[in-house]
Image (cartoon, rainbow, N blue to C red; front, side, top):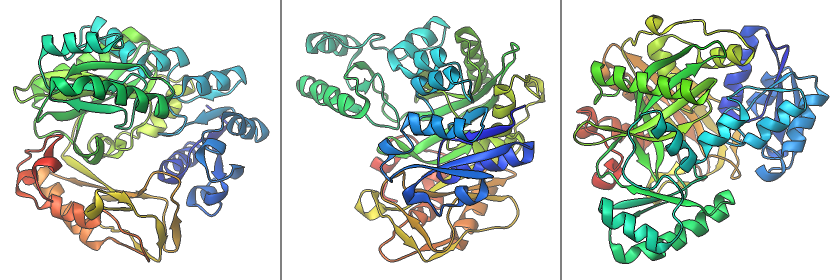
Length: 448
């Protein structure tokens, strides 16, 4: 087992990893920007190192500073959390070159799956269903038009190096395709330094379903059921739940085994998430794979009683999985709401500021993952999430009722700061949400 882990992240995920280290008897090192000097993860760690100013490019994304902090503090492993450098194969390679274990998949596997075009090729070769479209990047507007005419509109253009719901354009009219291709390529270059774009059929009214997988270096690979992440704004998730109200036992077993088989074939190791779209006919289609711990991992933990972060650390240290597929049992229902410092009335625009009042909910089967307390400053430089509220119930209705109660208790207020608490309360009581009739275009079709 590792002696010291440097946590290359901030906020609630850094605090989550530090707590897992504490329970495993591992010393933890936090890194922080000058804007986060008073953050909870800095206080919780055994040691903390400032890695630069507020700008992420000069702190949390600055590989020399992060690796230097790890070497300086005697760390033998680095946990990247999610976001920032968590899916950067160059970072994983530098860690390996410096003798640091990277808590994630091998760099070459991460690179292959992080490239959306390469991932489609690999996963398709493993026998998983792919939406009609291109596997390789689109070479020209003429090629894009020919493919779109063949598979039918609407189509979606996606940045090969994309992520986080960015670098995506839906095209419904053939006349708009050349301009959309130019714009998406320019966005991809600006966001990801790679203008490559691929094209596939766009599914109207689809569900976003993802399968949690865990693999070790001993040939063991398991899935832990699925999560439904269909409530989204700008292709970014707001609510996640497990199990999905649209997935029955037969489909769960099928997509779970497909995800496990694909992971084995590509040599995956660690915790990962295979993402699918589920169409109106109940057919599932591979979308992408995330090679890290997910923001929404707590809903899986709540229904399986498995500590995913601890398992991730143990696997990275060379241990075999502590459970087999037959040991995984889904129990009850869990829902997670992401509480963001955003203004839903202004298109979910960021609303940073000081939280003069911060009183998270409690009670039976309510979990709150947060790094905030009363007086915390929500800086404008990073993701706007200030907390995740996760609840468990014996069934979906019970979980939704408990979530309403938890959200009603939550107080997060400050001058100029707005949050998504009110939005989530309205959503939980929305008749269509209660019926489980949620798709990725839910917010486009309904007023919440």
